[in-house]
Length: 199
Image (cartoon, rainbow, N blue to C red; front, side, top):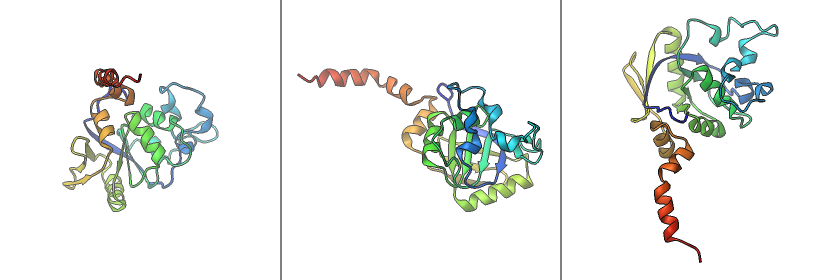
């Protein structure tokens, strides 16, 4: 999110070991009528969180008081489906600041990076082990160090390196979006334009 720097995040994790979670499951289409980023968190995974009578589904992880935190750990191919940016807005508004998975849909990943939500992609085996650790130790915290591009698991002493586009990394570290980044280069752009005037 513009203005909010992402450097190091230490948090418990919310496990959602389901593969191919699409954007319609993250935020149903009927909640896409707003252009505001705020207020969508209450509809995050709405059709999984609530039954037809609007009552919380006890079995769903977001309704389970055992799990909490600002890191969602999800199954492979997270964020597939439509390109709706509202999916990222809903995750961020709910309180998540990072999502860990073994694979992200490209459009979702780009939307996340543009809105301050860090997608951390790790190998499938590491993801399976992380799910097991979270289930065995719900209070366990992990550390995401964006500067060093490391997912650290103090419980095991292990650290997993993840990749990120260098430009997007710089934007996240400085709390900027694409437009903010361009504005920091305003003087250089103006200087370039003066030197390259087309007759």
